[in-house]
Image (cartoon, rainbow, N blue to C red; front, side, top):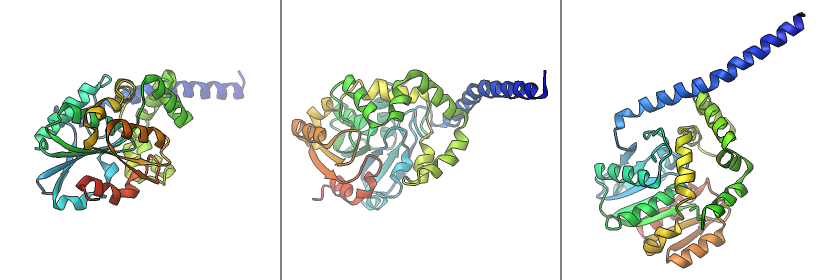
Amino acid sequence: MTRRQRRAAIAVGLFGVFLLAIPIAAKLDMARERRARRYLGDHLYSEIRGGGDEPIVFLPGLQGSTRYWGTAFDDLGATHRLVFVDALGFGRSPWPESPTTLDDHLIWLHRTLEHAGATRNVTIVAHSFGTVLAAYYAQRYPAEVRRIVLLGTPSFANESEGRRRIRQMSFLAAAFTLNRPLAVAGCTTMCAFRPLLRRALPLLRRDIPSEVVSDSVLHDLPAVDGAVFEVLLKHPIATPLAEIGPRTVLIHGRRDPVTPVCCIEQLALETGARLVIVSGDHHHYLDDADVIKQQITGAQ
């Protein structure tokens, strides 16, 4: 064997070891992250700000966390109690080892809000995936929820339309959610390199706050599987809004690629929800924080 051949063999061997190490590192990382959340028991991670009596609950979107909201709504704490919650399987909330269902999300959320004393006259503000949780929560607990304010609502008539819309959003969105081998490989790699990605990704997405980008990798494959296949694609948001529509405010961006404005207009017409159209896209609703605050407090 020549020197060049030996070097090539060593390089191939090292690359093979590297590939074998990725799933091991991913499993170790997921186990570490789950251990770090055991202190929460059967409650979701939440942060409470403000000292008012009426609660406002904030639910982030898919791969989001409490840090999505920043301090944009903290001034409402003078008159309201603000409760920021991470969804089950995401952020700093517990990570189940199997895909979570809609019922799982609602049970954990209600238990958490009960513990926070937020079960009377509640306003829920939610973004993206969180809007589906908010709508079904309000349908299940109508006596507890006063109003829901939904930002960037994903509205799909059925699973087929949902899959088509995901494909239209971007190649990467479709590849890493609907293509199973890529989803497994991508999530395994992400988990293996999570500490590095939390530092590196904010350098690549400077249009989004660094803490939001950093927290976007705080999940694993069961969480995404549950959110996409057990919640978003199985439970159209039009179903609960048909019952609670008049207590709903839909705030939607003209450039939001997840759901075209025309579909949201139709949803508002069919359910009686109030529609407020803003100029932004799916990731920048907080640019219109003043508009959102007006809808939260009922000011026109």
